[in-house]
Image (tube, rainbow, N blue to C red):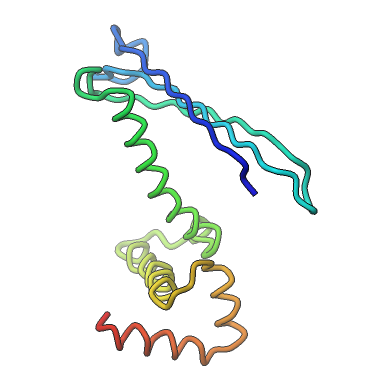
Length: 150
């Protein structure tokens, strides 16, 4: 259980983009995220800190620290979907790489996740285990999404 999260952002104007290593860089950003987890019956209390570095071609006038923080949080919400796709569907281990096969194969986990979410499931991993144990649930989910015109 997460007790608290804290984020700190530092943005520096890049006077010399070549020192940053990216042509056109206007700002270099450091975000530090600290997460404190409460003690549970199965794990001790813990604190972890993660540092991320971003580079943008937007100047400080074009992108304030508040803008940068909001964009970073927006990116993390996208990463949350990729986390589900990789952890639950083991997507990163797929070796399909030729022609349109990779894009076509990506529709399978996306469709599965979407159908399960539309059926009201919030824990995709648990829902997949339930459908594996009772394949009739798959037909119910398909009927439910079809009834909604999806």
